[in-house]
Length: 172
Image (cartoon, rainbow, N blue to C red; front, top):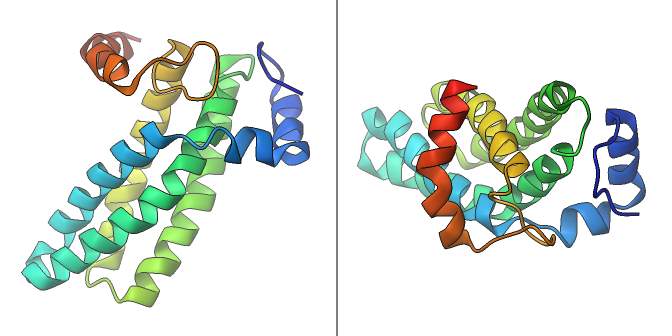
């Protein structure tokens, strides 16, 4: 079943559980994978620079690889939550569900890898997640950063729309 209209959060969560291939694999969001892995790689680099360049590069590389794989699924999840009605419930659900999954895995990967400033790195990442999830939902509700649907546009069209979307997001 496709979620092409607004729906209560329970129905959206049910659709995710019943049709994970449709909502998470087929709509793996390459736009989220690219933007998240680059941005978070830089955050981890900066957070670990005080431990030396080698530690910063290792943390950045780990985060980039981890996020490139996982952020496409998180983007698909966020894209699905854009259909929740009322929208604020979708935003709250995404801000709770997404970080619970994402940062548990992120912490485990970086703990295994031995990231030097893990606490600071995860704290920065959590703050970024709260902001970026809310912004991504806003952008997706306005047709940007969407993949695999009729209303999806090219990544470059989405990037051109970013200044306008950022201004609208700040105003909202």
